[in-house]
Length: 203
Image 1 (cartoon, rainbow, N blue to C red):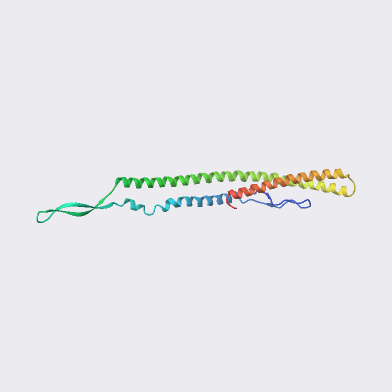
Image 2 (image 1 turned 180 degrees about the vertical axis):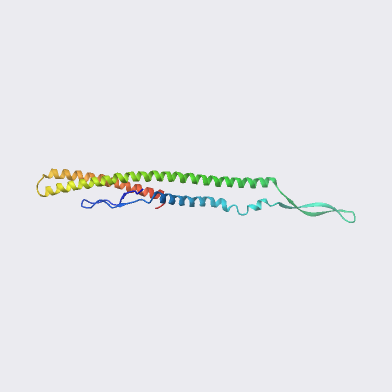
């Protein structure tokens, strides 16, 4: 679908503006998808990097116990012995933290996908609106060309003294009002194009 865009405002003796076009809707989608992909990676980076060293949480605690040992002479003595112990609370906390991080990452991905979907829907609506307004403006430009030709005919008659000044001024007023309305619509269309490009992260 080709969208028409009028590039410039023209003076009395100029021709109808040159037509330009918006990028295809798929290009707009691709641009906004890349933007939100970069945003997603940036938000997930904190949680992905924090996984480094998590294995340390699962190491057993090392300690020392003193046990009674009977010597060859029958005497009792205490000797240190290394011990390894696992804390169920520590393991539970580590697993809970991991589950919370995974849930947070899923939430970030889901939120990012939802916002991206909404942005693409908004872009599509703006794109359709732009296309419809551009078609209307094209028709208005053709009508304005006719108004200008009619005015030029009146102007030629006025210069030859065939009509009175008030008739000439009335024709000029009609043409200038039509031109002003066209330029106002053109400006609004230009602003809509900038909004679309901005929302697509192209400018």
